[in-house]
Image 1 (cartoon, rainbow, N blue to C red):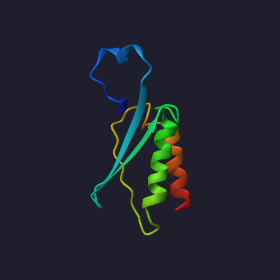
Image 2: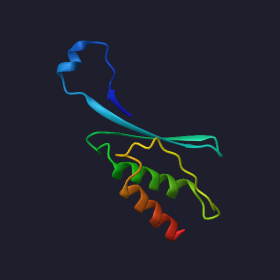
Image 3: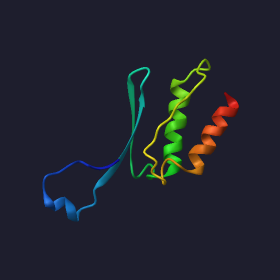
Image 4: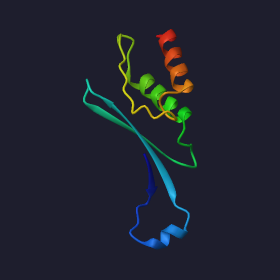
Length: 97
């Protein structure tokens, strides 16, 4: 989700340039842990490459070689989840695992 930062209660900000912040969340159901990846628009966009990078970072940081299955769910948003970038990244991870 893309959020305006900071959230202000005045209409004056409508005419100013706001900083937009992206938030992507991964929930590890088995470990009961949530990981939030947050960045502002100057660092990256809201595209499939960013989503693939987040999933890649999560896999690198949190999964061990003893893991045999990785089950993923997504909201099927075509721009972010069902795309070539994410599938290619997951295929490379599978090959190297």
